[in-house]
Length: 150
Image 1 (cartoon, rainbow, N blue to C red):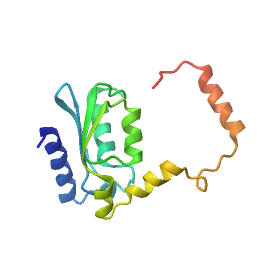
Image 2 (tube, helix red, strand yellow; image 1 turned 90 degrees about the vertical axis):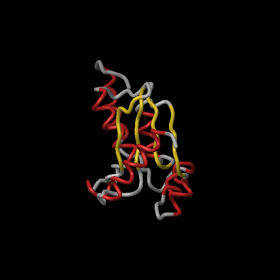
Image 3 (cartoon, rainbow, N blue to C red; image 1 turned 30 degrees about the vertical axis):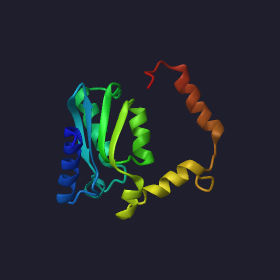
Image 4 (cartoon, helix red, strand yellow; image 1 turned 60 degrees about the vertical axis):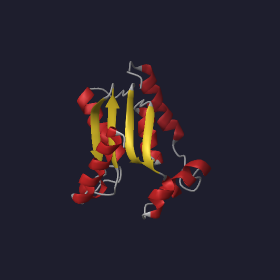
């Protein structure tokens, strides 16, 4: 077994045993060293965004002092859900190594497949645009200033 995937699996087990959430652990590496780790803490923190990958990204960003994880890889016990994949992309993580598939995750009672279906087909019933003009003013204020891109 890959040593980083073993660490991710150990993170997942730690979370399971502490009753923090599902069997999801993740490790972020850079230049062959672990720079961040985390496990699912949805139940522990009462926060549906506290997936293993998200917690590992938070940890790596804190440890490296940056929001840009270019040059990093992530090892995770399951194929990332759309939220986590989005965060991985925003963080500029280069490669994702995963153990279990979306189907494996669905088979133990999680509904990741449903989120992929919505992401693929759109969610017209859920996404309702309103007050665009006011929001464009906010965008214009931002654009007029000097900001760090990400």
